[in-house]
Length: 144
Image 1: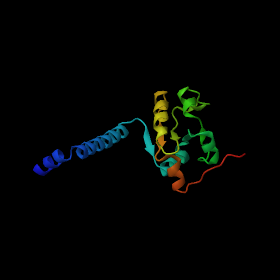
Image 2 (image 1 turned 60 degrees about the horizontal axis):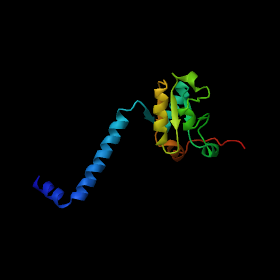
Image 3 (image 1 turned 180 degrees about the vertical axis):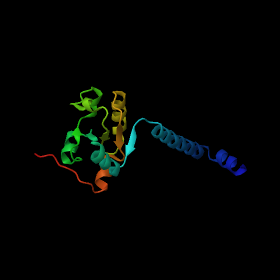
């Protein structure tokens, strides 16, 4: 124990950096653990679509969506969802909805917004389209 105290007193900046990183990791874990929005893997997304008729909601930019998206994915922007312009999605409040973005980060906020609007089964594709394509799963390109 004496060695730890000596290390912390001799290296205050390094010790502070370690504490900040540890705090951020714990905060991120706790936020994900207690979030009402679940994360699903590409395999789980496929199972939910096949077994429960889940809706895949792609929130990426129109150009990215056109380059390739998951089969039957609906395209809505985050701004549309925030403004509650849901293009018929409000009829599916009890159906699983899986929000997809490029890396899985911006989808969290959109999914939380959908949950606040009354959607009961909202989740996010873990890793976004990057994880989908890295798993060599099929994508559909928009017709020109």
